[in-house]
Length: 66
Image 1: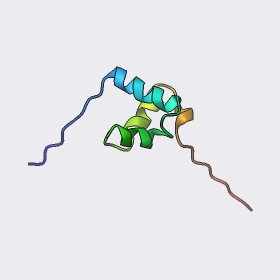
Image 2: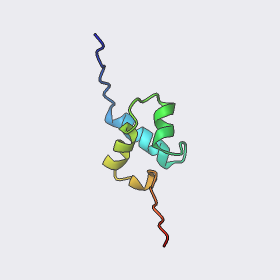
Image 3: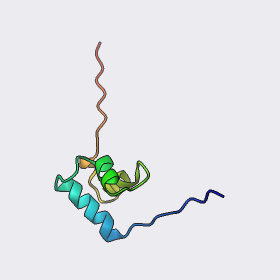
């Protein structure tokens, strides 16, 4: 059987990762997740949303012309 192991991160760890992104140690959620070997592409992005730091997330900009 291929059993998925659920990993739970402490609140302190989450805040530490978000703080390091704020401080500029990582360029964004993906870089932080890669550095800490956090699986799941949206895990760190979810933490940024939870702690109100969506300004640190990548933005999609749509430019349309006539």
